[in-house]
Image (cartoon, rainbow, N blue to C red; front, top):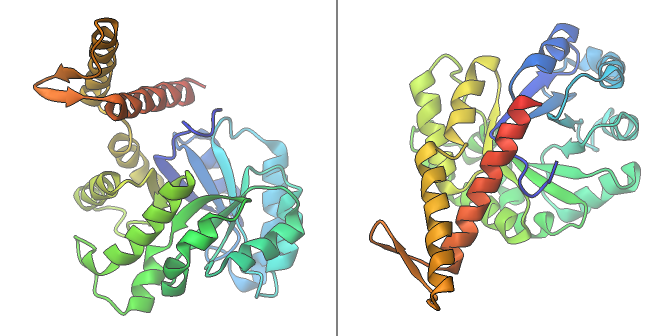
Length: 285
């Protein structure tokens, strides 16, 4: 799958220690899975979880879903062993928690060869260093850790997430500057569909590529929110057609629905259609 158009609408956390959850994940309509060796696994289960995950990935069956493994931090008793083991499991990327500096990414790279790295962005220092982290040549994605960020900021939970906007914005700018995907943090109230939908819409409008999820019940809402709508697809097609017609007539701009269409709008329109096409391919795979 073309990584530049790969969708990340729904990115579901799955505990690596739970065989039933690992099995169910094979059937869920998610774009990516984060197999979690960190927060979702109790301390005394971590070595066993590593073996359970290795068996599940070796068995396969996850189709085109992107397989990301979140390891424990390299400053823990399990991180280095996680890194070495996971690099041989055939996953698509390794997710490093609580990244605050680019040299932490390099320390992981030294252990895993050329396996792609994603970074959990969840601390104030990580936000301030987001540009340097995103620029690391092996870094291929950001995952926002909004629960930890809220804790460190000592903020109250608000539907508009205003206290976290500075940090979210810094990470968005860094990710977009380097052309890497960035997925929003989790929504904790997994039974609150209206609240999830509102936060997904907010994240999509901000520029996030998708949402990390904690429960399968959240998947459909995230998939709908971060996919191009039928209206957006229709507009994209009409913008491209109008611009091409204008070019054939020697004009540099076109007009669609009373709005100017220039090169930059056509680039966005083509990206919209490419994403829609990749989603359709993913859903029929």
